[in-house]
View 1 (cartoon, rainbow, N blue to C red):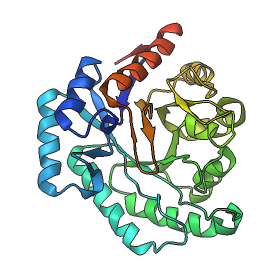
View 2 (cartoon, rainbow, N blue to C red):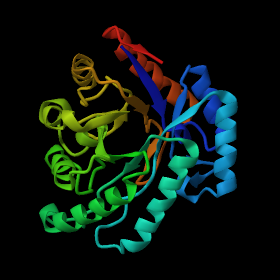
View 3 (cartoon, rainbow, N blue to C red):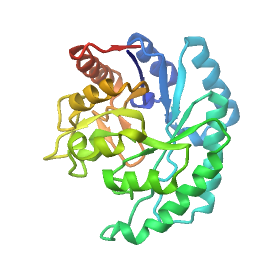
View 4 (cartoon, rainbow, N blue to C red):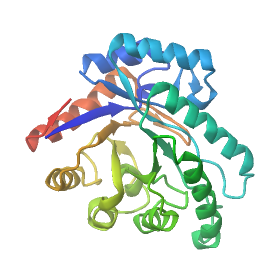
Length: 276
């Protein structure tokens, strides 16, 4: 079994050339495109998207996923303009030949019971999934803290209730930890049938601090072993957040990005898993 590494390259640098130099040095052939030149992927012009594609092609690097911010608005915000933004995500995925688009399930007002907003969340995600059907792309719901799908049971609710063949789960152990969840113990079994992509990020339960894979409470080794035994053959996307993390992006810099990559490669080596 050989697993494929990718990563949020804007954590390395806003400069595309520096992003690619770091990835190539780590023998990584994919990136997850969230931002470049200080702009979110959905804000790139057609010419800029073509420039990204040409530069990637010249280095032999492909796009594993569009790291979009779709679903990262308040559930009480107007949805219609956001659905229009999703069309841009679909366009970028097609132009860059990306098989996945990352999405979220809307921020819930602080103090509200998430159940109060369930119907609206599912309606919005259902509309997004319907738009994606027929576009040869799979949507990945990421379990970001403070959105509806921030804990395993509500992630399961989303994928089973929307019930679309184009909607699956991106497993992010650090985000679960930051919600007080022990990811493998409390979420892996129920979500495994829907996991199509894995974010490589770990965190400490006490503080929520993000740390390299295997150095926190994200039960990364347990999940890696379980994924291996189940025959999982998808992408593992480095999202280190080792220098800073925010609502829409994180940053590590080239040195800390390499630290994160080496930590995960070490976890794979412990279990005899090859990567490419």
